[in-house]
Image (cartoon, rainbow, N blue to C red; front, side):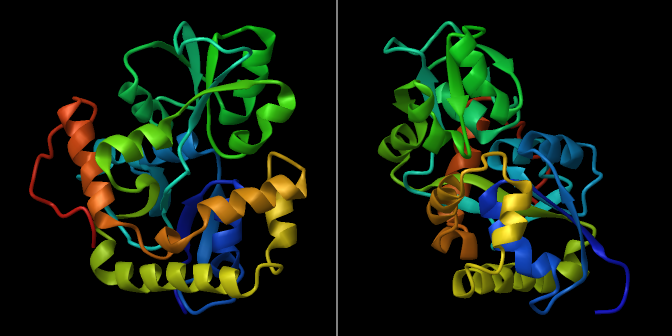
Length: 269
């Protein structure tokens, strides 16, 4: 497609590099994209500043930007058994000082299901070691941490995905692809279709993205990357469960985390 490339922000985690490899490399129909890869909390902050055109955002961050961005259906992260987990060096109650992977992350929002705690934000890949050193009492793990904590000697205290599923009776929406509302009328259908095509390509050709995934992965063990992809890239990556997303928004608004919407703008294109 002629014209300027679309700036597309997504995380360095295996599920994103696997799902979006085909789009980034022009292997499926759609707009040319200029990839912008970073930690999910950095992507959240970038969207909050209005710098992103199309970007992955945590569902917990969407409340801060929903007047400026609208969600696409393809490319998100959701499901059953995908929630963040709370760990510690040994069995104990959740509490003390808890390391979180950013204040805008869905993980931090879900911690409210258990109560209110003293938290310390840090990059997601630093949390396990912070717990092991005793810098914090507990750690809230996302991404590869779900598969590596036991090997590092940490103990599972709570699975927040399980808590969510039990209370809300729906899949857990972790993140979604957002597009700026001013760009949505002309670009959203094509971008959404391209994202879905990229996900379908990934399912059909799982080996095609191997080197791209390895290039960006924080955890070098390829078996961890494979488990990560298998869990987080699923039918909800093809199309988010809209009821689950609206459940998250309603709950976060009731909790006072999301400000009330200033208009009746739709959540999805």
